[in-house]
Length: 617
Image (cartoon, rainbow, N blue to C red; front, side, top):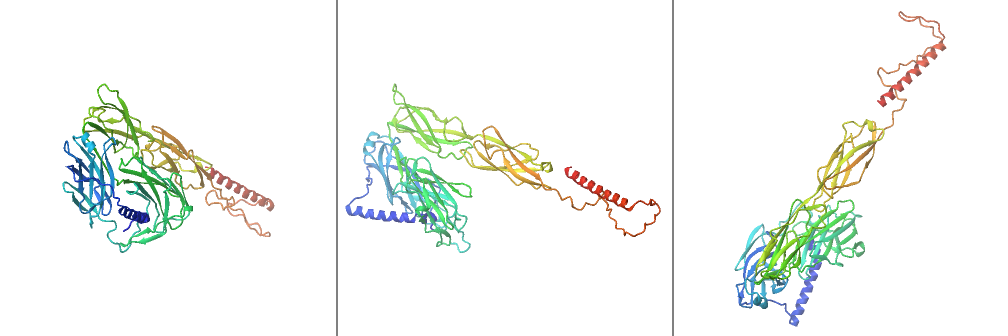
């Protein structure tokens, strides 16, 4: 299957192929050829320790090979080596110098489709005739086809190298329920040996094969690590609204084209692209970076943040290698030291942090010491310039790292700080830093306002959700606090210092006879402070709902006022007194009616008073 990245790059690759073919034809006509090394040699270097830098390589992809070379003492010149590539490996064509640790050129190397050839400079060999040795790295394309993961051992003549080959992606056809591929948010990068630059591609994710919804504001920001920089004027936005099923049955966005130039904006430095999505389209951003350290790092990192309206900010990263290759070496009468950096501890996300320091050298007895600086990143090795054999070195220390937020750094630990350089030997020194994240907490308390506060049950609780994004030295996190109604403060677990904590209260439970109003936070976000508890409160307003109408039918029970309405015909005789009753006194009917009315009004007043007293209770 052709991946979306391959489809996206096809127009550029096709153009490069045409240009390369035309250039080759012109050079052939005028008799110009590419410079090559000069075998056969009087002294052939021995190649050892050849190995792939990756454990698993996919058919059709590139892989890096590294190895070591050495010459016998006092070699006859010309001196160098040629290593033929076995079947299944094709060299990525390039040329590169062989340099000493101080950067002086001591030879040159050429990679073509079938071999690696390195030629040592005769003048350098004459000046450094003893213990000549060094390292090299270069790239090949793996063409060995497999149907399942297979370990393959390649024979280079005097040495071998093994690697596990995995089949091409989607090599097994799909006939039903084939999921759409290549729509998630991701970033990747490829090195272009012709230009010496990297092409980084940021894919803005879509939920399904229908593409993005329309009207979303999107901001893509690219960030490169030390060693390379974005090339202004080459950042573009591409899009497609076509999904194509490939030969193996998998649907994937295809036929990418550059978006109309008036539909997006690019910052002057080329690092930021802003656009509004159109419904049904998929989008990718192309960013070009150029190497600024001469290829010394070999591996280069790049990250990007994608902000889409209504969605969480996403961060993606990628790493790519320059396929240009490199070679190094050193001879006697000079020495160097190599400083390898390692960061340990619980802090994370510190990739790209640059560590600097100073050291002092005294080249000979009685000579004035001179100070120099070093610069190294985690997992890398910095190599000093060449100094005469016998030079005394004193490492003075490391500067405190900067730009790492609330990360706490322990004192740097060097494996050794004073030593003498031997001729033709690389002195290995390790530098270890322990990085830990300072921690703090926050607390929250519940407050109630309004005339309905008394109706909230005494055992009621409120759930407060909190979250914070990743920061220097720590990853993102989230949790919840359960707050009691009595106002007791609840303290969070330990949270990295410097984290910006956002809180949101869940909907509180219903309370009979009352309704919840607005929620008020004493602060919208909390910044965690090391070794402190930052306090905040959450206030809820609650009010009593409207009381029932006073004309409602009185409830049954002891408080019921009996009816006094009796219908008596005007001409009806006075009923006789029954046993146990009081005799009639002959009172006026008007008086009786008046007394009855007063009794009725009194009963109603008593009923209303009882109900109001019950509500206040």
